[in-house]
Amino acid sequence: MNKISISRRIVQVICLILLVYGGYIFKDWKQSAEAQKQSIFPSLNAPEGSISTTKFEKGSILWPSGATPVIENYPPTLVCRFNPNGGMFKACILHFFSENLTWRTSIKYLLPYITLFVLLCFLFGRAWCGWVCPIGTVGDFLTFLRRKMNIPVKRFPANFRMNLSFTGYVLMVIALTISTLIGMPNLARYQCYWFLPYCQICPARLICPMFGLIKPNWKDFSTGITTTFTILAWIVLGFFIAAFYWGRRVWCHMCPVGLINSWFNKGCGIELHKKAVKCIKCGYCADVCPMGLTKMYEIDKDTIYNQTGCIMCMRCIEVCPRKGCLSVKFFGKKFFLRRKTDAEKVSQQVQ
Amino acid sequence: MKKFIFLLFLCGCSFLFCSEKIDISFEYPDINGDFYVSGTAFFPPSSVFSSDHILVMDMATKKEVPSKITVSEKWPDGSILSAEIIFPANTSKKIHYAIFYGNEIKRSKIFSEPAVLPTVDFFTGGTGRTAENIDVNVGQINVRVDKSISIRYWWYVLPLLVLIFLTVYRSLTINRRHKSE
Image 1 (cartoon, chains in turn purple, orange):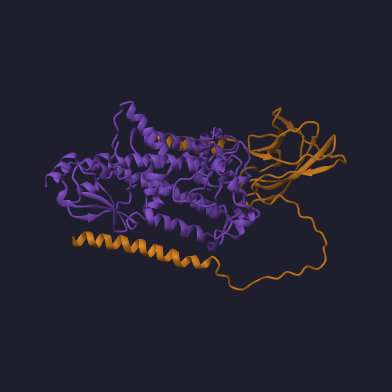
Image 2 (image 1 turned 180 degrees about the vertical axis):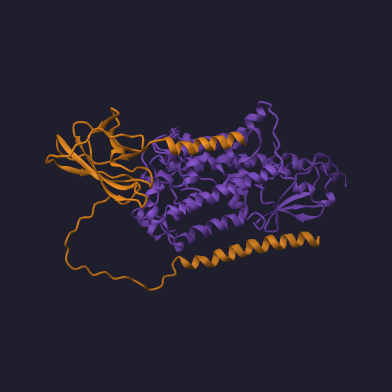
């Protein structure tokens, strides 16, 4: 494994431990109510007559293992509300929007959170997916298992990936529409069934509690609506496991947090550069791309090209056999070049 | 694809054939013996049309509990919106009760003459309309509403717009550089 892969794995494991077990590690650091009042981030609470995750009891689908997070904020990665002991951060950005649309929170209280989210996306784009996301790390582990079992990777056509992104957007729009509708006073009585609709089918809700050996609520057949959500959650979890096991990062194409991050990918601080004159069209970059992107390989001009689907894992730069062909810059400052091959080192010494 | 549509169809069917359930939660009073549990339950439109199709069940023994159900409000289509429900309970054993409703449900145990017993209110989570209002005269209260404009959180619009502008600008300039090169 190359240096960049090793550093990525180390960062992924550290982030997984911090984000998932942060609730245990930093349990004494939880903000007091008084400190929260002084914070630049206002506390967002459910108004009277609305429901919140803390009101759900053990046994219901949305039971968040009865703990509050260490930091009530929403980083641009799939941090789950259902992490054991509350987790390090509160939740993902879709949870944030969904919850606050239902609570009809004034936009001014949401602005600090949205600004921080946009700032982090502007700086690092979808590098959050490739380097930080705990669910992505779980998926990479499944991919590692597949490789160990010598099962060949399944390559999905570009159309399939595009359809996945479309499905992700459709699910996101439906979830946010439902969240808005149940926030209306005359539909408030449905909140106990339809609160956080995406969370009810998200695979992270079922996976994250298991990190703390907490049994998630796998099934709830008490009403028609909970039965439907239970079946949908099973279907999505099945797809999630299959997507990571047979393909690589296929789930990331329809992950709602990844989709929101991808809006910032083209203009973010991390830039992928290609010097076309040095490219020998070996196709290694396209082969190793976990997102199945081939644009970098196809381009025949010197360019900076951040694709919306790129998770900045930098595997393409790592495997490129030509020195200086692919590189990464952070706001124009070069910080990673492909390493020199032994032959190149020798030729440099000779010169 | 056909299998997926079939699964969706099954999900849809589950709406039609499942009887609905509302969990009842209440605090047991600090007394020994019998007491009545009373409260209002809300139902979705077109879900139940008669109080005969609503029953209270003891979830420990899965047996019906005698109950008095009075319809309070109705939806425009004639289905029940809310109903007041009273049923007896005992402090000797903490039991979980639930309301079941639906056209396939038939209530058989009805009681109409409640004795004089202490009553506790139950609440069905999420509706936010179950708390009883109690009028208490506390005299004159002066309330001062601060209507001065506060920009404490609104000023975040500025950095937010700057960041969005920078993202769009960078993505456009990077593409332009790409074209010129």
